[in-house]
Image (cartoon, rainbow, N blue to C red; front, side):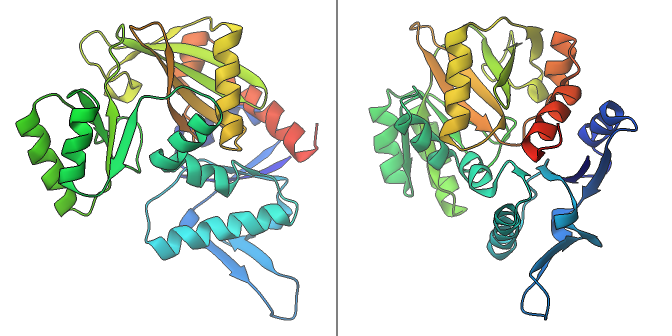
Length: 293
């Protein structure tokens, strides 16, 4: 099998995929910035990247979502969409990537699918944000609309601080995304969905309400029950994605809340905590998706 990986050639995940592939498969890392398309040149439409024709690969795996201008991001997603329509499996497809990276859209899709998410208010003025802050109980988590890995999120409990934060964000042109803070036991659950397979770990942070591994949380093996696994599968389906990390928070109120769906999920912590060759499982899924199994 020949796989194109849209991501950094020096990333841990490219190396892990190559390790798991051995001599059986070829992994070609390609940068998003090198995507090109040709139309009406006397030949069928073609899509290329860094000198490689993308339609010659068995599948394309998206492993990064680099920042860019609106034009650049839209063009990149358009190319991936057209490539998928030409029969090359793109994992995850652009609509899934767009939904996952947009916290408002992701939350709306999860809620529409019947999944519980924290109460959320999204607005564009500090006055509306202050009203939302009060409505949500005066204890909120403020997150950037785009972004991940815990970057840029903050908990705001003081009204004077809330006003300063909201005014500052409005001045930068940000959309204000507020969620009610969910008291929890100091950990969340990361469920890695690979097709219909679900792997689960618990991410524990004894001194910080944020439970992202990159922020110092400890990954532990966790045996998720069938209900939690079904929540993860339902969250992936809601975004039309098949390889995702689903973050679920057990609230002190006894309910489970879907916090986020990551369409470019890491698996290093999961592999280490479970002592499982996750890259080999990803390869098994990619072969099935490409019809190469």
